[in-house]
Length: 210
Image (tube, rainbow, N blue to C red; front, side):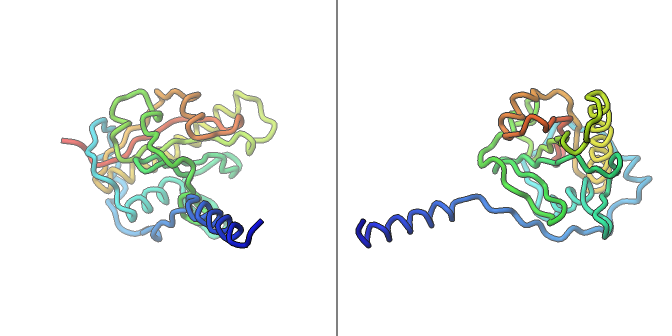
C-alpha cells in the first residue's frame, strides 16, 4: 500500500470521526428567581397550541434542571424516585434531532440526528412544537420486581418530573401538555431503545400559540 494512499485513508477516517455527533453542553442552570410556588400553581394549565419559537439554551437548561436535575451533592434529584433508583431518563426531541439528558454532566447526548418529532405523539401539534420531552423508564434499574410494580413505579416517578415541568412552564410563561397518546413501539424504534427501556409518557413544551 502506497504512503500517499495511507495518508488519504487516515484523513478520511479523521473526517468521519469529526462528523460523529458530539454532546451538547448546556449553560449552568439558574436556580434562582421565577414566580412564587403558589402563583405558579395558580397559572399551571395544559396548552395544545404552540408557536414555532425555539427555547433558548438557557431556558432549556433551566427547564431540564427543574425537571430532573441534580440538586444535592449526593446526586439526588429535583424529583423523587422510588428507593432513589433514578430509573427515568428524559429524552429531548427537537427539530435538530433527539438527545438524552445527562443530569450528572448537565448536557445532552445525541441519540438521533434527524427530526423525529412526529413520532412523539398522535396529535398534530407535536411535529411542529419546538420541544417534546419523552420519558423513558429503564427497567433494568428496578431489579426483580413484578412487571405491574415496575409499571406503577415508573409512571409515578414520571408524574413527579412532568409536574416539575408544568410548574417551571407556568413560572416562565411557557405552555406544556403531558400526553399518553403515543405509539410507543414506533417511538421506541425511532429512539433506538432497548427492550428493557419503556416509554411512559411524553410532554410538549413551547411558547403558547396565538
